[in-house]
Image (spheres, one colour):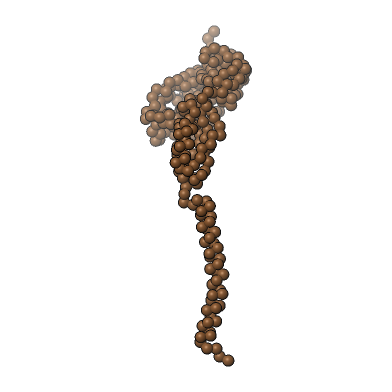
Length: 285
């Protein structure tokens, strides 16, 4: 029996609705899930973390509160580069985009440096002594040399020009002078090429080469502590020459420039082997 056109149309509509309804339900569920996830993660409401270095904790809290972020102090250190009680390190770093409500962890500059026990450096090698000082939080002020059969062995440790005994209490961050042996024949070293190095890199190279930093004559374009830290050497005296050798402990003066365009260190500048003592002179009795 043939069905009428109306019956066929009605049957087609029912089947179409039966096919379409599950798709609509699935689509609505996906849309609801996406809207919930968007709300839960605060999508589109990222906050830019401000630079809080140098701020007091109260100032940092205010800066973060205005961006719906929270400050938490996790540690303290001591440095002369920032005011006491100010922010030294922050995580996330300045400029990061984070969700509102995020915790920002701060390290503050302690009001007083911690006290530590002076280690015994005598009889250690120069490299060992420098490593020990760095690990416990002391600095190398100067390398002095005196005749001694053991080249680059520590023969004395000085603080403010006077011998300092092991286990003496001393503030972290203080500088120690190492008196090292120069050998029986007065060892000499090549002049390292410091051009292109930062001030921190210069000190590391000079320590490896058994030399001292003399005077930072100028720092062109250095207006802030950051400028000075990032500036690179563009001139040094004495200059680096393949044939020139200088005595252990000699001071090298440097000129810095905050415009580092074209100022890059030579390849292998951080290889300690190139700074080994390769020449000697006879000591006149």
